[in-house]
Length: 308
Image 1 (cartoon, one colour):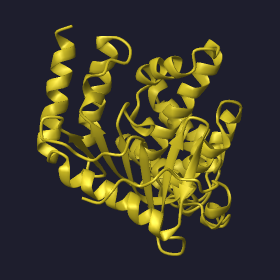
Image 2 (tube, helix red, strand yellow):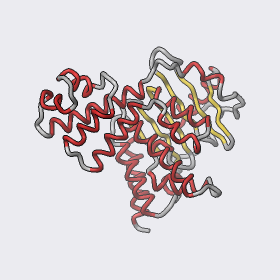
Image 3 (cartoon, one colour):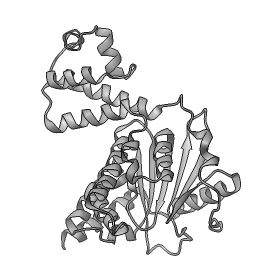
Image 4 (cartoon, helix red, strand yellow):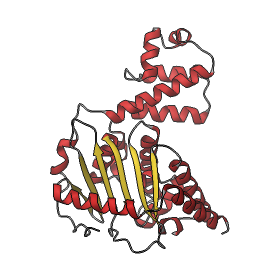
């Protein structure tokens, strides 16, 4: 097994600047496609034709078709008119509103700039550009898989001097981040989690049951692979800090690693350092329990909290 990567000293801003060309907006485009599919589903559920709906938004059949295929930027007025016409319930309306926001606002996280450090903003934007994410966590459920209640207790623990409003805004950011990734077309996600995360209480037993149930549901999807590092399987030379590894589509840099620490984060792009982090994650993946065994471990942990 390769040695653990040494602590990093690369500055975060410069190495990743080429990753963010302004003309590439796959995150925004993906949200537009998901929004279009949702609108098409509501139309078909009601037995309506494209022609009938076209009149609602003062357009043609082709305009509705482009909207439903995500081929043209959605206009808020058109979407709101369709929401009213389809008589969507409150939850359905909230989902459409979130997707509309993502489709219209490429940098949606800027709404949370008061509680988001610059290095985290860069990671969130990079996640939207990525084709695949592999994240290793040794202490908590990764932020992109956290439910609001779990996130609230975790944020309160690490930000004891923060106000309730600040905590709530951080939780909202994490929720938007999770929804944006899980409701879009990209990326694929592999989460390598230390078994202690399943047992370490964050909030009440109910909070833990809900969070673990969500991990089970996410892990049952084709795009999410959750693997647990079983503490009884023997020693694994695991890094003492979380690692996020991102790979990108053709036309940009191939990959980078993100390592967060108490006062900032490092974006790793140098080939040798990337090799170290990639090898560390590969070793962890090999040592982790199978997908089926990992699911059983999450179930066992959830059942243990059910007895509390």
